[in-house]
Image (cartoon, rainbow, N blue to C red; front, side, top):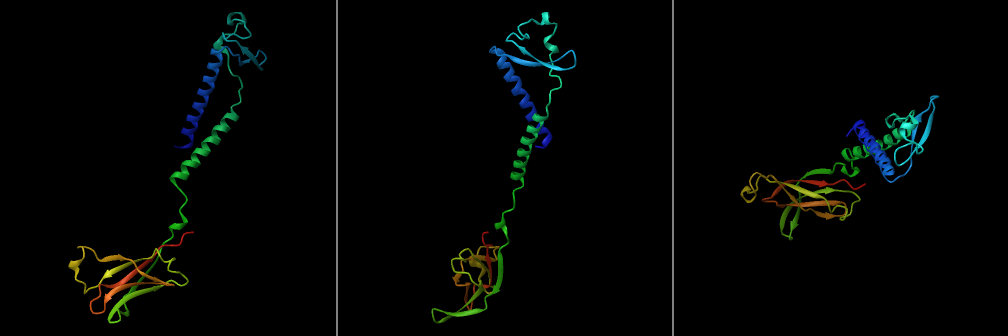
Length: 203
């Protein structure tokens, strides 16, 4: 909602509240003062009794009809300022909900794609390939959220994988400053390259 419609609604609500308060006072016999334009162009307050007459005098005796009682020269600047202040708060709150401050943690992740060009003897007898990436200064705990996305090797028997897929997300091995993914036997590797994805650290 824009400022002007909101201000109109608040103003209408304020007027309704004042009218309701005055009606309640009249119904319980409380005195209500009305400002009446004086003969010399000045305002004067005339107390109204429960019957609606000024100072206990009938309208006919005073020569003043109830409908001629007006709030002459009333200053609405304070009311307008209050409504403007409320509108400002509501508009700011709406803006904060619809256009929140971007989260600093939404920084792009670190992405490294490396080939499966390293080898080690799996079980001491079978050469295996693997991919490795370095994260200097990071502990294994720091790297716990790293994901390895391995690409199928051209020599892979594709019938063992769901049709239409080309990669698999796997959990990497972790060490001090490194993450590694095993790619399979040198003679028939399952993967030929691995993309390591490390989310940006929290601020």
